[in-house]
Image (cartoon, rainbow, N blue to C red; front, side, top):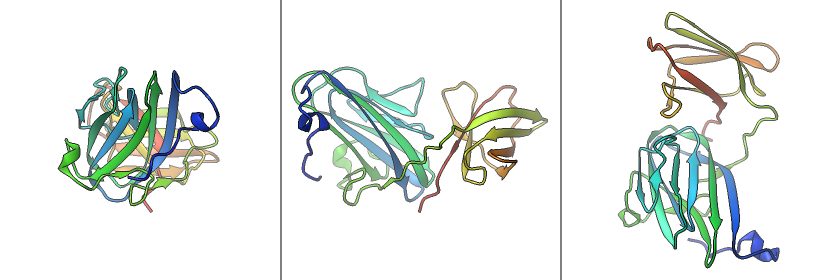
Amino acid sequence: MPDDLPLPAETSGLTENDFVIVARGNVVIPRPGDWTIGVHTDEGFALRFKGAPFASVHGNGERDENFPEYMMHQVNTADSDTRGILRNLPAGVYEIELLSWERAGTASYEIYAAEGAFEEDAATEDWRLIGGAEGLALAAPVAPATPTRFLTIKKTGNLVTLDFETPRPAGPHVLQSSPDLVNWSNVVNVTFSPNGAGMARGSATVAGEPFQFYRIFLSNPAP
């Protein structure tokens, strides 16, 4: 791992205790398959890997069973490590968000990753810091000038048609469905096409579930 770097608060002369940090980034997953994300902190944390639920979480933290895209350690802690396994993750660019804090004493924050499924730190020597040398690369933000927003959702038989606003009508989109707003999965065999200025349409043949939630977001393909 690279040498430790000071927190911005230290160089700005701010307090060494009682602060919260929020870190966001877009991480490139270069190959499909299993990946493990590790969080090393001194105080607790919550980390979201947007668009992919953690299959399992190991170490000091736990998976949020209501929102499995999150793993977390909810209380103050000394130096601790948590690892979340992502199964069958498609290649692409994913947004991550880390929330953590410092109550008192020492403070440290690292997010690391390795290709494969590992419950223990000692199970592999391939861990690398995200954004660090030889680690998963960080991509430029995909954040749009205006949000992606549904306009209409229609279901005829097993055909779902969705019209939505998007800053990039011809860009790559991902459609996900959920029966309960907790467990999300990618909708397969969906086609997208521009449908006017700032708008697009998605069409997909789905199973005959009586009730489903949908969400949609822009996604960059892996370089």
